[in-house]
Length: 100
Image 1 (spheres, rainbow, N blue to C red):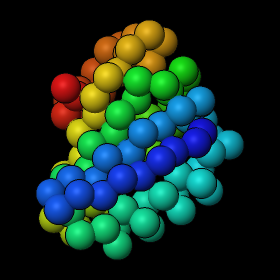
Image 2 (cartoon, rainbow, N blue to C red):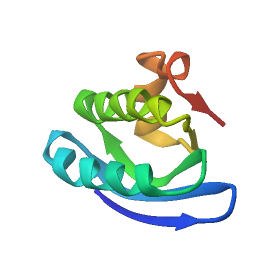
Image 3 (cartoon, one colour):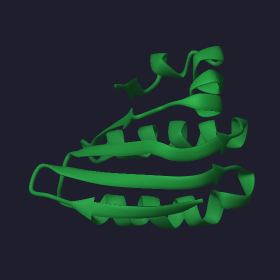
């Protein structure tokens, strides 16, 4: 997993590429720490270039959602497609996290 984080006054946008699996847990947690420090209350994950996600990757997003709610921040996902979209649909992920 690779990511680029961009901050505006109102939003933090995180563009993710590659795969999000258990092996990415440490990097994901480092990203979480940066998001916590960001001033915006809205975090948008652009998954256009995310090619694969496993159950551990889904769990990381759920954990992130729980953590961010403590800080009054909301996360959402956009440009979900391909295999990532299929996994999220099958797991009814939209019931936990907003998907545009």
